[in-house]
Length: 379
Image 1: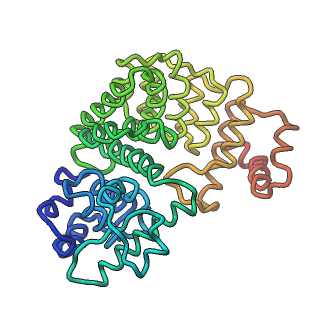
Image 2 (image 1 turned 120 degrees about the horizontal axis):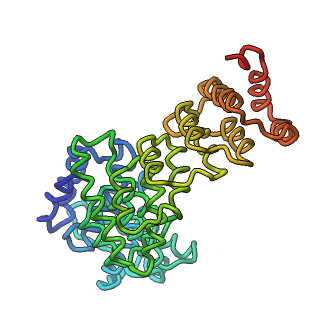
Image 3 (image 1 turned 180 degrees about the horizontal axis):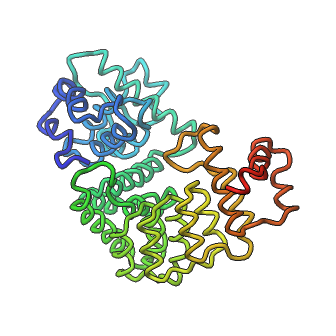
């Protein structure tokens, strides 16, 4: 998230026309327009809706006027700002009141363009109609907005925005605890030049989440620890351990998370801290990375306990690691190399179970045939 929010030049606007004169250029200059990679635009919309100091009616009007419904769900914006419409209680024009007035007040904003004013009002009516169709009230989308906003703020390490969302009732455990996982992942090591400096912001975000619900402290730590491991965020792992994470309890799952995401530094740090490697899922997690070094590290650390051979073989046969193209030709040799490595290290699943898993699956069968070829067995 930029240090200077993209919408700041809008803060002095008092009309929809003034906002419209700046809106598209601001998004383009800050490279958060819909044409830029996901989720930049959706994040920009959330930030504007939740943090701008403009009156709520103007914020909502701007989003309805120029928000792209292809790139963000405008029901979230209406959920965040619908109370402003309810407070004003504007009446719909007589021509349409019979059709839409049962669904709440209008949003009529003055503008020099009567078509724009009509478009905003019509879009407002359409969005509110979806609430009736879905059988939910705007309050449902209020909660959804702040939960989505919290995840976005955690992903960007924005402490102020995180605390604001928590104050609005956002739930860190919503949407599969996505906000907690985003905070634990920390800054993208491949993107900002100041990732090390930004790390402190993410740790402060984690601290804010912990302080927000002290009763759920241990549950949050158990979610954050493997998330940090998967992101190869050793600094967050050390910080979380200092906050009370029990390595004996949480280390095994974190090791598997690190192995599956090829997070070698995190994997080695966890081993140094005494994380338990006697987990049948660990070898399968390493095999799912389709990386021979990762599998070797796991085996050397003690992975490969009873019951782990078949899951590891199936992971090598089927997994599609992140950052790899989902083109099967790109995976064949990598899968084969992992299967051969497992065999060389003495991992051999029960023959009947493996045959049942391969039966009827042409792709799996082709790999197993290649594995049994003399050249593979001796390589």
